[in-house]
Length: 168
Image 1: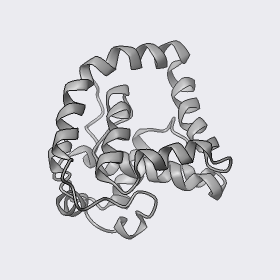
Image 2: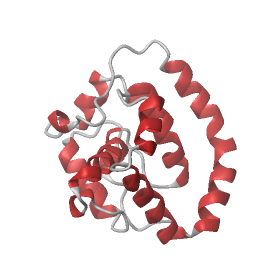
Image 3: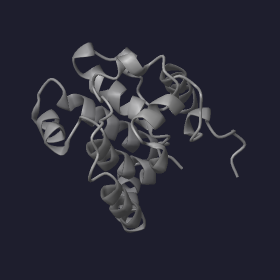
């Protein structure tokens, strides 16, 4: 059992601001590359991804990493086609590599691919439920332009964008 308390940003009803949650996220995840240390041309997507971890109350374990991307596509203004364009963009795609390199540096290549393989079957029922719950969504969380949310409480954000059902 971990000696560290559960991060406050993971509390479904956290009243921390998004900025406070991001600060805590970096404090409890020192192995993650902080986007502020990177060139601005691709740091923005990393920061948006990290803000998503906080907004959705996700940690950096494989289960939550695999859950976060489709949840982002289904509940934010960053859709699957945007992700494909990001992967092709030569100025932004290196940021995606940084995320994968962080995972590999922390755990190794074998861990990365075996954990994806082992985690996906466990996650599939939750992904199916999430997909069904998000089909008629009309309000989308801003992904790349999340800065206006930084001083708002996580609870307010989660309520406004109907995210509470997805935060455990």
